[in-house]
Length: 442
Image (cartoon, rainbow, N blue to C red):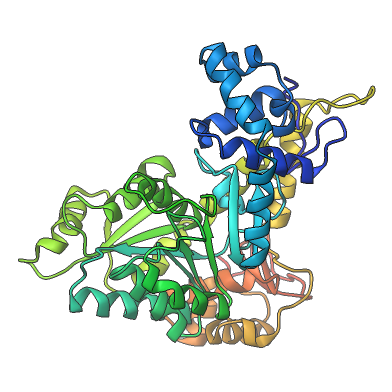
């Protein structure tokens, strides 16, 4: 396989475009015994899904490390899977979903940079490719009144500050987190463990519709006909953690899926996890208290606490996007005599593209209605006082640091301000006229 690749390539293989690659991927993933790991192995071994579909059984056997007869049976099913692919596309179109491949520019950068990203992602609603300040709020399905109240409160406080809330759409804490974000007029993302034909739990179908109506997204890596099974929920949890810069757990026993999500964030993604404490004698909060005591999760009680963790995660997000650019799926073998770029050139161009992509979600200034009140106030202050360090802006507004940090992060992401080489915040269209020798900067 040719190891050379460009940043965020579009799939192609000897004249097979994206449509052919998607068709092949859907046929392959529908075959029993071919999961995400084997689908990735086939793509990497044959330069694309279409290449794998056309490969000889011996090559498939070597790529998947199985015997030739098993490989032959798998590929026979895949090659006969025309109707499977067609049915998946029709179902996606019928429910207003798009199907994103790992190589697509629209694939979320943070998820792409994770150790185990889905090769295919089924998306209803708006799922952005560029990182956004997103926080996962997860917890017990058998939540107490206290847990539900706190989940809704924290989600609403964060949503008011422009933070996207990510959760699993389950009963209990998940559902209250989604609802809290929407009550505050914010954006939320639900990640399902089942296919869109079998949303789980079934009684949350109206909740998922409300999330879409509010400008959020409902996503899954499962084919439409896949029903919820216990082993699929840990797989779902890795997506929740990967889409979020911080994971917060509210009410979790010592053994729980919510704590697993937090451990994925910490151990696999090197991101921050936090727990909201509960009543001392509550078994449902015992896992949260243990995580705080062991030191791998921070204690949080308010949106300010979470915002401090979000600020620390900013550079981590930049690094994740750069890693995604360097490690994006390889473009299959070139046709003709085009020389591949040098490895150093590829890494440099990927890093440059990643830095360019992160701050601006659009080349146009978003309407005021899409920005939080805090972001609008921060923009106004920058326009009034000119280039300033964060301490000066905080004094001008009279805000605590976590609140201001999140507002400035939103302003930067919208392309309405930037930081210059001296750490000064400069409003869009403004010029930095102060140097590092300025007494106000020192």
